[in-house]
Structure formats: structure tokens, C-alpha cells
Length: 62
Image (cartoon, rainbow, N blue to C red):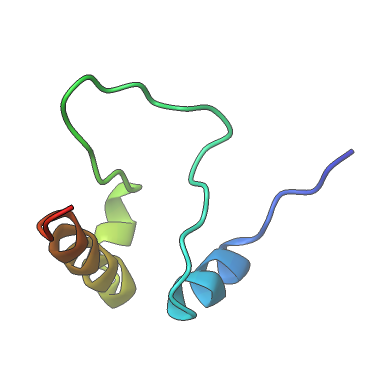
């Protein structure tokens, strides 16, 4: 059986500037992207930093 990465692993990976897969199945969206998090996690500084980074990256010209 394959083990799932821990929350600590995801946090360390994010701190290293890497993205992690958030779910084991894709969320299909026609014209939008969503930042999804469990409620309490939105209050964590790293979650806010990631959200800001993601929005900055999304606003860069292709």
C-alpha cells in the first residue's frame, strides 16, 4: 500500500518553493482556478503566503 505524504512533508516542500499535489483526483474547471483549503488552515501564515505567491504567478504574462 502506498503511503500518503504528511502535512509536515507538504509544508517543507512548500517552504522549499515546490508545489505539491493537493488531491488524488483532478478538479476540472472550465475557466477558473481555485485555492482550496480546510477552514482553519487559511489562518496559517504559510497558507496566506502561498495564496499571494500563486496570485502573483497567475498574473504574470505567459
